[in-house]
Length: 244
View 1 (cartoon, rainbow, N blue to C red):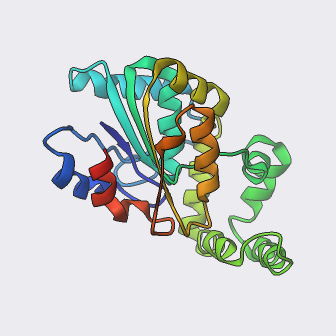
View 2 (view 1 turned 90 degrees about the vertical axis):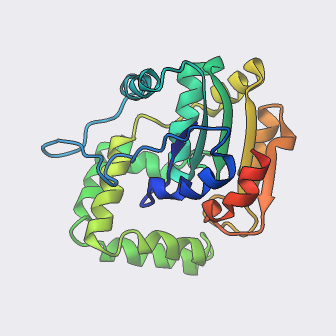
């Protein structure tokens, strides 16, 4: 089982899972880029990770562990890599288990920030001084355009320079890994890939309605499980492992 952690998290999130499913699975949990011991060398901006790059990395893992088929579990930002696995490997992915996964809908802000010249320039400018951006974010929350709690979550990620740099580097590196959800759901349906979706009932970042829509499109509405928690789904490792 490949296990992808979330942004600013670590593979340690999957340590407790070993207690519950260690007899059934070998859990391989790598550091995502710019996390832990995983580094990227670049001059000005991080290179864009391609699906071919991702396949090369995963192929190396599969070769090391002498397997061809595998399952994937992922949390939050790591969800986009898990969805990419389905696009790349199709029927070789025997199970897909997502906890509040990222990239469940089109994000215009993300697209503007990483895919447009103006957006990248704007993003980079506020690496040094985010105060104007924070003012805009607080204004949109006060006008009711976004949840105040959600906006607070995002502001916490850009208030401090090291975190801003990590956000920038991760977003830029993964700008070409936004999954094609229509393709992914069609593959899940065609190949009958086992699907389990875990969402927090009180999650304001990635709400359960996104999981409901995805499960229906994949032809597996029963795959959705809503747990009594917010966004920190790995804390429900015992419940999730029991369903696995």
